[in-house]
Length: 191
Image 1 (cartoon, rainbow, N blue to C red):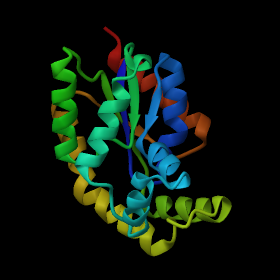
Image 2 (cartoon, rainbow, N blue to C red; image 1 turned 180 degrees about the horizontal axis):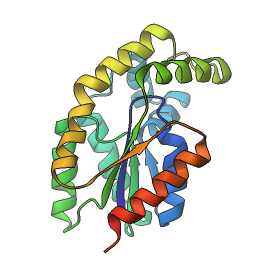
Image 3 (tube, rainbow, N blue to C red; image 1 turned 180 degrees about the vertical axis):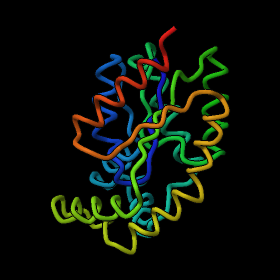
Image 4 (cartoon, one colour; image 1 turned 120 degrees about the vertical axis):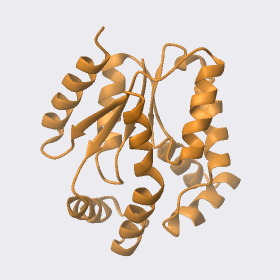
């Protein structure tokens, strides 16, 4: 099973990605987690990524693509994977399409968690208070939403045209969203 999970910042991708990956027995691969690990350990990549994220921007395609290709080449990804936070641009979509095609593989589904923008701002501000995340102040959050809408939302149209998109209402309790997501993905990939 090869899956993507998408949604604006704060839509619950990380929470739901773990559950979805466990459901299908594949690793959940979060580019955000990879970046945060590097930032925490102050690697050269981490220092570079931190300055980009602190400005509310996304990490450049070539850096992200290299990291993802390296991770997908690991043995635990042979039965499949769930990508969280990648792709975010059409450049990355084409990279992933080529990467998978070169291996005779393709995506099974693209899950899109749909949440109203103002609800997302409230979620992220609450998360910033709880987790002390410096990258989550209101100006940066709104900038990330703009960047998401401009760069990432068009990907949903691409995946919808390929018949891969599974829109899931991302509002409600974690358990309610999870149940809807499982049901809709299983219905989508059923023969």
